Length: 142
Image 1 (cartoon, rainbow, N blue to C red):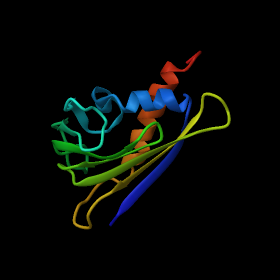
Image 2 (cartoon, one colour):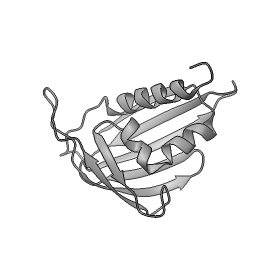
Image 3 (cartoon, rainbow, N blue to C red):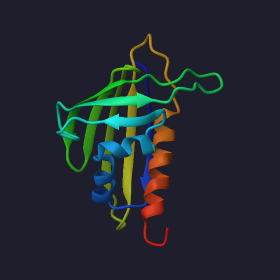
């Protein structure tokens, strides 16, 4: 199964990063291509199903993201979450590790897709870059 992985140090404590990514309505802020989320009442919990709406316009040399459902597969607060995006047939996992330096978190994002699905290999990098920017904005002095 093809996969792409990215790792980035975020300028926020792990609890703050977790609170941000665990809020379903914030996913559109950091996940490329998603413009809206309608979560079920469980939020980020194993077995939850969220409706996701993707942007309509494709970019240069790439197809648009597909709308569909986000199925939450596993959650271990505040360090790990995994989900499946049905529209693009992507399996995603996010690992958050608290750094020794206060106010820092290392985030690792892995995206896997079936062999017959084409996906952008830079997707994890782009998602973590957005998450970094959002954490930087909320950091003291940021």
